[in-house]
Length: 126
Image 1: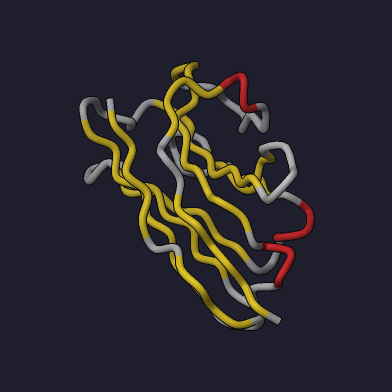
Image 2: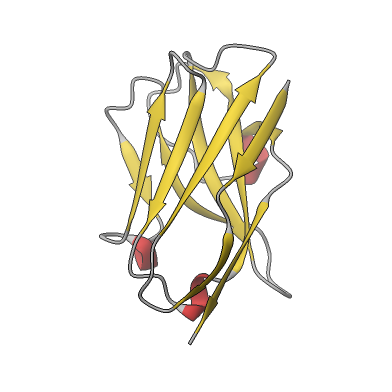
């Protein structure tokens, strides 16, 4: 199973980016998905996630209203639309697959993720 994240880059505060994660090797239609991030000197933290059905989403408080997570199970992708970016959003962003099929809620714990992408760098300048 491989997760390939793309879409990161260097932007200015207030700009937008769209991250995309393509999963290959297995279907993710039955698994919750999530995005995490890790800034310099920080632990990896939950950013956004959604259930297998896509009906339930969860967001880190500081990104609510600015970030939107979506999935296309037919194409095995999960995206993160990031608007109104701030310098504190600077981090390496990772997509992840929840290890528990059909989990009814969104897990925010890195330990609940089974597969991880390599990450894509997002840098927001002030």
